[in-house]
Every structure is written in C-alpha cells, then in structure tokens.
Length: 125
Length: 481
Image (cartoon, rainbow over all chains, first blue to last red; front, side, top):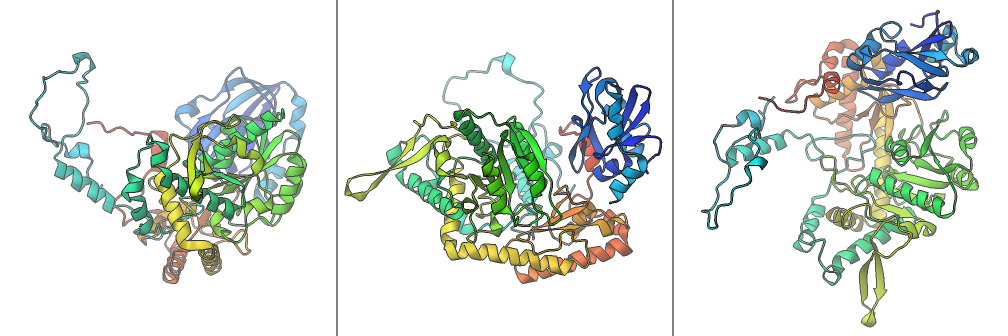
C-alpha cells in the first residue's frame, strides 16, 4: 500500500506536504518489516532536523531502526499519542500513525524524494 | 507455569535458617535503617532446593538439546574443562595473593596468551576482557589511544552491514561515528562503497569474517590493503573464528586487532549470559596500549622463569576488568586448546563447516536460501516462502521447541528478511543433523498445510507462546502480592 498523494524516502519514510509544512511517518512496508512496534522516540518539538539524517528511533520486537528526516527544518508538532500507543504505526501508518510535522527550511529538497510509483518499485525489487 | 514462584510458595514465619545461640551482646540495627516493607519469601531450605532443582530441570541447554543458535557457536563444553578449573590450586586462588604464590597461574595465562597469539597470527594478547563485546571495546579504546598519540583525529569506524550487532554498538558507545558499508550481491563487503567511505577520518574497519551470512569475504586481503592505504586500522571480530581455526589467521590477512570468544570457539560455557572471556590480540605496534596488568617473564638463574604483573606501562589504556580476567574460564580454554592440539583445532573448523554445508544443502529445497554458495560454519535461510502462508521465522523457531530443538537465531542479520541463522557446530553427530533436517522439513510442510499449528507453537514447553509485544510495551518485572 503506497498512497499516491505523498512522497517517499529510500529509508521508508513518507511525507505529506501542505505549503511549507510537511507531515512525516513511516510506510506500510516499513512497519510490516519491523513487526510489532514497542517504542518510538520522536524528535523534540522546536528542534531542528536535517534531511536524511536520523532524528528518531523505532524499536520493534525484532530490531531497532532509525527514523530519517525526509526534509530539513524545524519540528513544529509531534504525535505524542505514539508514546503510549506505538501500535498505531502498525495499525494505520499513513493516518493515525503519523510521527511529526516539519516546517521546511529548504522546500527545494523535496525534489530529491521519491514519487509513489518509484517507491513501490524500490520495495518490490 | 509448571513451577510457582518462591513468593507464591511463601508461608509467613516459616524459617529457612537456623542460628547458633547468641554468645555476644545483642546490638540491634538502628531502627531507621530497618525496612518494614521488605517482602522476602519465607520458605524452608528443602522448599528452596526443590524449587531451584525443578527450575534447573526445565533448562533448554547444550547438555540437554541440540542448539543451532547462529553466531553463538553452541558447541559441547567438555566436562574435563570444569574438572580442571575446579582443582583447588586454581579454584581457591585469591586475587590478592602475592606474586610468588601464583607463579603457576601466571605461567598458565602466559601459555594461553602464546597459544592464542599463534592461532590468530598476532604478536601480543591480553586475556582481560570478559566477553566478546568487551574485547571490542578494549580493542577500539587501544586504537583510539594509538591515533591520539600520533596526533591524528580519526573519528569514524566503518562497519559492514553483515557484521555482528555489537560492532557498531561498541564504536558508537566510544563516541565514534559509525558508517555502514553495504554488502555486494555475493554477501561480501562492497569494495566501491568501501572506497567511497575511506578517508583520513576513518580510524578502523571492523570486520566480522566469516560474516553473519556465514560467508568468508573473498576480498579480505584487498579490503585490508585499501584500509591500510588510507591510514586506518583493521579490527577482526573473531566471534566466528570456529570456521577458520587452524586454517587461516587474521594476523596474516593484515588485521591489527582481533578479539576471540573463548565461550564460543574454545568451548567454555556461555553460562546465563556471562561471564565469558573475550581475549584480544594485537600487532606489536599496539602492544604498549594493552590493558593492565601485563604479565612479564623474566629469566632467572638456574633457567627458571619469574612471572610478574606489570602495572607500570605509561601508554596502557589502564584496567578494563577487576583482577586478571575470568581466570577459571581461561583455565577451561587452555585445557580445551591443549587437548585439541594444532591438528584437532583444524579439524574443528573442517567439521563445523562440513556440518553447516550438509544442513544447508538438505534444507535449501524447503526454505529460501538467499546466498546459495558454499558457506562456512553457519548459513542463513529465509522463511519468505512460509510467510506466504502467514508463518514467520518466529513461528518456526517456536515450533522447533516442540520437537526438542533449540531455535536458531532469528531476524538476524537484518539484511535478510525472515532470517533463520543456523550454526550446528562440529560437536553434533550425523544422526542429530539428520533429525534436524527431518524436523525442519516437517515444519515446512506444516506451514503450508496447517499454518495455525505452527503459529500457535510451542505446545510442549512449560510456558507456551509468550506475548513478547506486551512484555516489551508494558514490562512488569516485579512480583506484587
């Protein structure tokens, strides 16, 4: 499942853009590969993130993985529900399982992200 | 649960001890220091003995079951090693005994150091580290000290994605930046990616070889050459040394530091997660940095040798462990090595590799084999085919318990989906290997025809499937009445 209305990274994050704001989560493929997620460490609200640099951690019963920032900017909102309910990422990765919102400092970075068909090709390969 | 907790069996006021009559004045503890809420279980000695004896009978261990846990080298631990380690002259030594009383113990350590140096092709060995990852930590601290001495500020450690997980963890713990090097299609280090990552900032490359795919890197010499050409050092994770024991030596490949796991390759027990023994070997230029104390040998008159513990080594990284390593484990390791001799060590490598390949060839029809080439001591199957029936690697692991077999390592290495990492070791008979093959084929059939059966396993263990997700999300490690 790869929705057409957003962009993707090679590290399996999705990003949904609204003006200068970009909402970020991980893809269905990512949550499926990770298995049951038990803990999520999100970036701090007000902190800065840099494109394709780790800014958080996802821990599942199988492995610990990093969350990469798809774009650079300031974190203006985080989904704190995930602190107590990390399973939302497994249940609804593109909806309630969203992770944080970035106010982009360099919107042109978006051009380096993958479109849905390209991401689909990546995970099918 | 077949055996209740001690807390559940507790009866208030039931003593488990008997004190002699008091023959000194009674001096009560200060009342402020006494806790009233300390709910310790109260049982008789016999209740406690039965409890722990029963628990010990529930063990799933190398002494009771086949244990093909990949990258852990769960070989048989010969009982004679324990017998020798139990000799009063070893077992009753006190770490503060004066040097002249422990000459035999020091001689034993020096002999083991020399043997391990010979096996790995290194110049000097320290037996101090208490585990493999501790050896890694010690080795990397030495590498850091070496570069600081040279005035070089190298802050990057390269780690292939097929390395043991402790490699990046160790480097990160020391504040190094970890850069991961991808594998190529044959499961070795991608040389182009290595070249791209090499720079004057790289302190070391840590190579697990054979790697966690069970494959020996065919480009090892080339890798060593390229890292050295850029001034970096080479760290060899020897956890998988079983596969090349007596055949090839990391020192000859060009490696500067190596750690060994005596609790894997040299048959000492893994024992409940520790303690182990993770000696390190280094090339001569790193010898000044070895941890304290270093055992020195001094020839005396009448051709006898005096062994001393040298603490005066200005470049040393200092102590990494109290006293002198896990001494009795080192006795076990030496006993094993001497019993094998050079020919025996080589045979260990040959048979462990043969056993792994025997299993791999028999099972590759029934499970996906992502790297289909001759393996070393272990190999990786993928449960991708079984996943189509909603049976995961985890389910297969649990089902093996019902057949009296300890599961292989699962979901590692991370570069293989639904990985099952199988290492039979050299100490298993052909009959045991054949039974494992039979059981794995049976489980593959079950996965296809009766997936629910596998998904619900195990059925025959004292505790059936545990909810590991709940345990991780809401850990509850206290017993509360």
